[in-house]
Image (cartoon, helix red, strand yellow):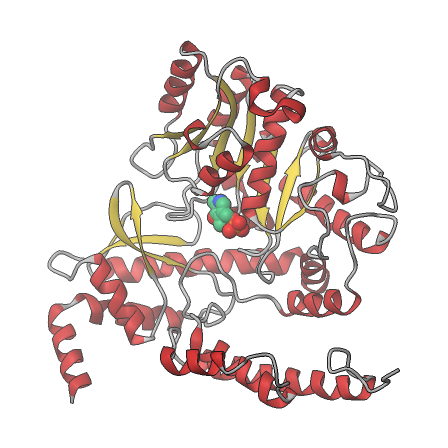
Amino acid sequence: MDDQASPLFLSDPSRRHWDDYLSRELAAAHQRVSGGPVTPRLDLAAFRDELASFDFQVPCPAEQLLSWTIAQMEHGIVHVTHPRYFGLFNPAPTTPAQWADRIAGTFNPQLATWTTSSAAVEIEAHVIRAVIHRAGLPARATGHFTTGGAEANYTALICALTRADPAFSVDGARAFRGRPVFYISRESHLAWLKIAHQAGIGRSAVRLIATDGSGRMDPNALAGAIAADRASGCIPIMVVATAGTTNAGMIDPLAACAELARTEGAWFHIDAAWGGAVIASRKHKHVLAGIELADSVTIDAHKWFATTMGCGMFLTAHGSILSSAFAVSTGYMPSNDRERDPYVLSLQWSRRFLGLRLFLSLALAGWNAYAHHVDRAIDLADRLSAILAARGWRIANRSSLAVLCIDPPPGAADVRTIVSKVLASGRGWISAATFEGRDVIRACITHGETSLQDIETLVDALAAAGDPVALRSADENLSR
Ligand SMILES: *Cc1c(COP(=O)(O)O)cnc(C)c1O
């Protein structure tokens, strides 16, 4: 037998050497990223050539491989870990969340069953209970970690369909005497369309409800849509209120939506994928009043809670539906416990120890640190709003959270031009979005260490991009 060490599984001393090397190189790269452009430029042709040279025949030395990979990350992606990333809800992850990935990767627990991974399953359950308590959901509520908001929202739809007719689990959509439909606002996250497709009720089962001009679902339009569906024989399965719309951070009228869902016998889900983190803040959590009325709630840990990517939560007041929806009997699993085995209570089967990220973050820093994290972002968004308003820009949305939808001043360049100029400058990352049917510039405070100075740099970059004169002189400078 060949007892030469395999490069797949390094010896302990060699592994320690490369782990240390990687830690040092990552720390150095992190520092360079924070001081460089948010939108680095990749020489795509050179990159593709280098990538193609990995034919996986000749092994590549560790140092070369690790440093090449870090360099590609440094130059080939938008830096969400940069303090001037004012972007989509992608955080700079907390340090303890990064530790969690390392610990989970080392022990690689399989969280399908409690039997084999008791400590890990119980740590996740403990965090879920803490989040339920902090959110003010009923004490009987339960839940689990998901890969993200889309999976959590998918879980909500499956629960709603299963509750509406238990035969759904056997017969699918055919179990219903009419068409099952559900309601979201037209400003909602459109992963709902894919979710309806996956669940087998089809994309046309999604009713996009009009908003009221401020980016919130209009409860009268919702009531009208439900009545029209009833009249035509459709079955209203679920009402979804978004708490923190992706474009504009708006919160649908939670209590009014809850009341309509209740009188219709429909499941009431709150999609608080990003905005849910406001439960941490004593100062701002009142904006989520009504969350306690939800049958289920989505909160992503990988958004405002700033864990590493791929970490959501599904919470529900009706835990027993989870086992009706997801139970399955097997002979080959170590156990089949419908109280505590995650694989019979959720969509996933094999699962990673995702909850450790939020556990370590909460345990190291406490709720107060998250309260500060949320309050600080909202405060910075308010300041950005004030500075822009003083310079003639208009804020289109009135979010109580940390997202601004911005209209350029009269006479300035259009939204798409401004956004592409700011991105090209490397001074900040913002995006173009639509709000209430028109183009706006979207800026969200997502990074825990964005400073007032970063805000001012963004305003300067916007002004330079929006002002045709400044634009011309910037171009001249470039061509010189
Ligand atoms: C991000 C987001 C989603 C999708 O969640 P993922 O974590 O990206 O799967 C759904 N709804 C809202 C409101 C979101 O912000």
